[in-house]
Image 1 (cartoon, rainbow, N blue to C red):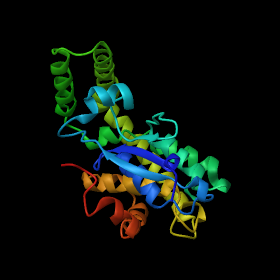
Image 2: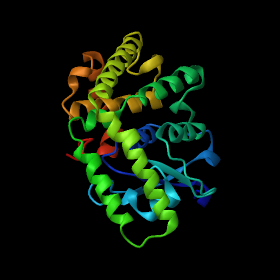
Image 3: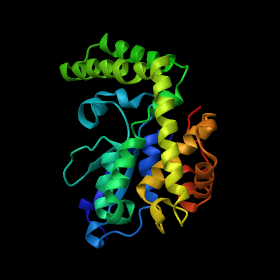
Image 4: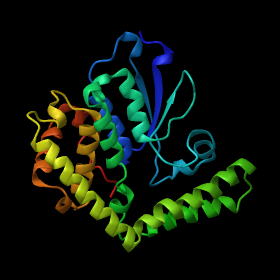
Length: 258
């Protein structure tokens, strides 16, 4: 039986693209370095759409001040890790086929490149009310009798909603996001076409980059932006989504809550 130190709590939302990326990459993780490196994920759902649980005092003050998922918390340390790429790299230390050593530098860079895309900008294009609802909810909380730490956390979250979310929905940001995405997917398509296997870099099993890329493509298809995805990448993702690991994570759900 694995020790308690192997247990990690993963705060996630079933329709959060970055949460799905982490969960799917873990489902595809391959063998651990050894028994001592095995990780148990204890999933903790956080409803970030209907209940806005990420805006609670506990979440903002104790889990992730950014008010976002996913967040990984190893029980051994209790220190939250609130970034999907950082979480993926952390997991890869125990499961090396997630980021295999011969391609570590390139895969790591492309993971960062992929996450430079504003997933929020694509998903909520033309829906500024999404940010407005969150801000309204936070202002309602500010009007109540709350602790000083919670008030400071909400004020910080409000700043992030303007700087990170609302700004991603402007016409200028939308144009830049689409231009950057088209350049990156063309590069990834080229890498895929030179691979002699079903995965990038001639790998026999998918890396974390493959996993994150499949989820991104699925999201683009779900929101009706398949025009951004080249045919070869679409076929690559559709084949991956026919696998048992995808079904294990998605359970026939879309990647979107709407």
